[in-house]
Every structure is written in structure tokens, then in C-alpha cells.
Image (cartoon, rainbow, N blue to C red; front, side, top):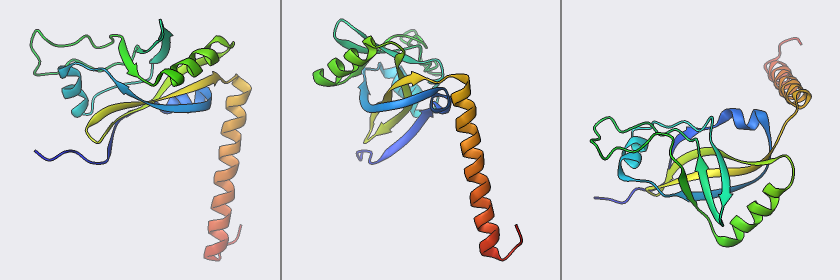
Length: 159
């Protein structure tokens, strides 16, 4: 069988970029059991409630939902179990130092296969306040209107 090439997106946490200021991102491997990999290959996962933590010098992904494999037997996995993240020691130490600061959290942004191996993109983030969210939405809306005006102008239409 030929080895897989490229990336295949499985799940994305779109709400995370709305709710948090993303500071730094890392790509981490995941320790998975067989039925989890089969379920992911079907494209079924959710990162909405997921978060990361550092426990005894190891990085963990919690509350990420990978549903049970439909053709699995008694060896099926639990859907919201604690999953180990594979990171280098200096990356774990850096994350742990930042998590000690007030307001920082570790969140998963996307889950994907890269060259046949399951990877998760995690981010060190700080929560946004309500007015920050409104400001971001207003900026995005203004940019959309500006782009639309430019396109109308290029087509020769009135503003």
C-alpha cells in the first residue's frame, strides 16, 4: 500500500479564533488507539469543548470528542478520553511557563492527518472580552465593505 502524502483536515475549531487571542501555535502528534484512528479516517471529530493541560511534565488533550467507531467491538474507545500530546521537552516547558500566567489557556485549533499521521494544532491563547469580540466583528465587516466597494469600482459601477 502506498504511503499517504499531504494533509487531510478532519476537524477545525472555528469558534476558538473568535473567542481567544491566539499568541503561539504548535503542531503536536497524538497518542491514539486503533478505533480512534479509524473513526478519524471517517472524518468524525469535534474540538469545540477541547482544551490542553500540562500534567507532570506531559501535555494532554482533554474533552476533544472522537466518536466511537461504528464497526468497533468491545475494544472501542471512550469518546472523550484524555489523549497524550507528543511535543518536545523545551516546547512543553515553554507552554507550562506561559500557562502559569493569568488568563492563558491551551486550546486545539485543528485536527488533521499529515503524511498519514494524526496531528493536532494547539495554540496558547488568552480569552477575549465581549468588547474585543465586537471590535473584531466590526473590523471584519468594514474590510468586507471596503473590498466590495473596490470590486464595484473595478467593474465600473457606482458606489
